[in-house]
Length: 178
Image 1 (cartoon, helix red, strand yellow):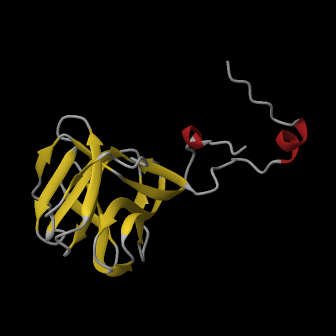
Image 2 (spheres, rainbow, N blue to C red):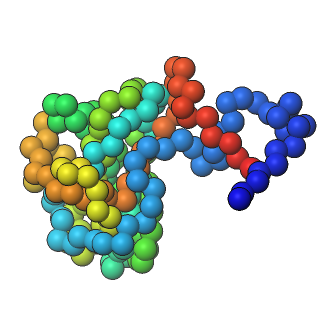
């Protein structure tokens, strides 16, 4: 049995809604145990249900062998595979395991519909991690963020998530930080 005690003073003086310190997210925030390589010049991602607010960035979990690779992330609307937003194409230095975050210059409004969170790279050696997902959750398209995306599907839930700023009345996003 787990018991969590929240001081009354905290409850009385907190500024609501109370949110997780790193921001609100939707997607898959776990470092997957399987990986793909050779996905250069492809747009790769997974289907996730969005939240009400503004999409700030997309993060993805990789292993880099070389010191400088270029990445950009994007969000597609699943119903018609329309490209909603994409980040700048920026180099990420360093090697090893890492979460890479790409922010959007003009963050779009999002809602509670299905989106495809994606990443694109020109690096052939970078590993993108995933776990087993739902049928057709994984999406792959040839080329640099085609619009609309012409995706093939797999059952992969890639380690990627969107950080967003809540908007509207979305009480399901109340997260407490202890």
